[in-house]
Image 1 (cartoon, rainbow, N blue to C red):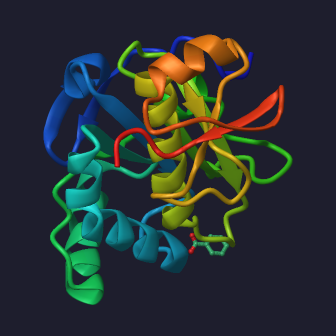
Image 2 (cartoon, rainbow, N blue to C red):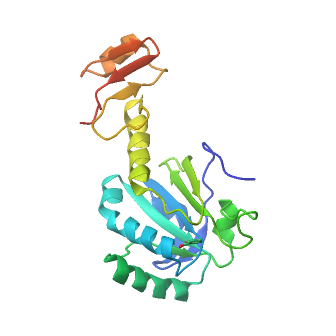
Length: 211
Ligand code: BEZ
């Protein structure tokens, strides 16, 4: 059965370009992003791994470890990473899983047979420190991911986890956020000393608490 939001992310052991890893041990107590690629030496994936490498500091700032999956073997991954470093002007410093037995692809339902019988689709999972799946995005093989959106969702999830706020449509870092419905307005005034703007009893904004 496929994974859904709120499910516990399955643990696994895997061969990676950074050695054997246990997924949960690799994540530790932080956040994680697991994302799949149709195959090595493909153009869109090359740019995506390059972009992920370029954003390594941004992920680290958010206490988030990234981990890529491709169903090709380790020796092929290593050659491809050299190409990524060369063409994208980066230094890939996160593991790329060699999922040649399709174990991780199966656990995370990354093969959609009607799209391709063998290649993984472009799936991305954000996993919280509690190992629960917080976000699933699936792109077709021909569309590279929007990493600005990935960071934006990560920021939103971390605000919700730490401050009981939600984020409105198209929210960007620094803009007002929404008080979650579970908090009474009385409690909101106490919890958010920067102020609460009540547009409707169910639509209440407060300045971003960690700014
Ligand atoms: C790619 O990963 O680059 C790709 C895969 C399938 C179709 C087009 C591009």
